[in-house]
Structure formats: structure tokens, C-alpha cells
Length: 281
Image (cartoon, rainbow, N blue to C red):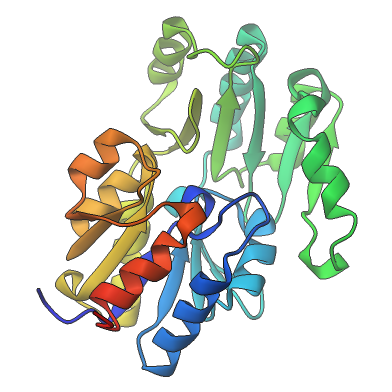
């Protein structure tokens, strides 16, 4: 196996043990890698606004790839270096499909999350929102709530990086919805949570985000270790020199990876770094 010179990790279900829970062992592993001159970077489905707090608590530096590969931010300054988006005229048609399906949905731009009252289930958000009030203000999410889908489209403009949706019944989304989306334009359809769907511009994804990051940093793919747990991670795990699936990951993700580490509640990221990067045994 080639020497690992860059580690990239997903957040939810991978680096984090819960929505706002960061295992100390993972933080320690990041610090030891950075001290050894091996950068650790994050590639997440979260928009930057949702990623700020775990990035700070995890000790991440440099650049972070957000919104399933559709954004790149500087962790220290919050500056957006890159953004791939869905045009407003296309977004309007997608929102009409969401309204007909009556799904729970929202969207990410480079700097904020947008929700729409008729299409947002507060029961899925209340605990997170309540907990967030105790956070430092700099770590809080920047979210905006629209009264209508028309207002949501106006506020998003041409800046939508990811439109995500989820069934209110926790069942798989209906087949007609997928067909309706595919008929509107060319998109990348992915999933960052069970029973959910992420709609993104064609040519996007975590693999493409990793390729952008690797080229920017001047690091070859064989010198990269990527860690993830769900379907949207498969592309980057297969592209990297060493793809690591989490023990709690989906069976298809494990099959696509080179190796499997411990679960996210067992600091599986730290286990992988210790074994394959820091060579602790």
C-alpha cells in the first residue's frame, strides 16, 4: 500500500458519533496526523452552515468539501472557494415536484439552509434546534424559513447546491417522483440518509469533490485514504487509494471499500488512522 499523505472523512455516521457528538479519540487522531504533516480534511453532505461546529470541535484545518461535493470552504475564514449549483428556473420545477409529493425537504446554498413551512416537518428538527440554542453563536446554523415554495425559490436564486427530500412516513420515496425529477434535467441523484434523496447538479458528488481537493493540494489518489458509511460515500471510497468503510456502514458501502474499520460510536476513524496512517500496530 502506498504511503498515505491525505486523509478525508465523512462527518455523519463516520467522524461523528451523533449529530453533535465528536469522539475524543477522533480529535486526537486528527491532531496527531496534522502534527506528522498529514492533513485530515472533511467531505460531507452537510452544507457549510451545518458543518461549522463539528469542523471546529474536530480540529479540522484548511479546506472542507461540503454539500456532497458541490462546495469548498476555507474552515478558518468561512470563505467559499468553489460552488456548483442548480439554476433557479430548474429549482422552481423541482420544488413543484416536492410540493406534489408533499415530502419533507430543504436546500443548501454556500452560506445558508432554506426551508419552506408547508414542506418542513418540525418534529424532525425540534431537538436539534433546541440543542443549538446552547451553542456559541458563531457555531449556529444560518437557516431561513420561507412561507411558500415561490418565496423559497426567490431567496435561493441560482445558488442551490443540494436539494434534499425525505418521505414523511420514513418509507422510500415513490417511483413517480424519481421519474419526474429525471425528466426535468440531468442531475446526480444520491442519498446521504436512509429513505432520502439528494438532487444535485450533473457532474457533482463526493468523488468529484475529492478529485478537486486532491488536484488543489497536489496529492495523488494512491496516497489518499477516504472514510465513509453511506451510499453517497461509495464513489470517493472507490477512487481513493485506500477506501475505508465504517463498521456501522451499509453492506454495499462495505463491499465497495478496501477495508472496514470500527463503528462511528467506537471512534472507527481513529482506528483507521492509527492502523493505516500512523502505523500504531
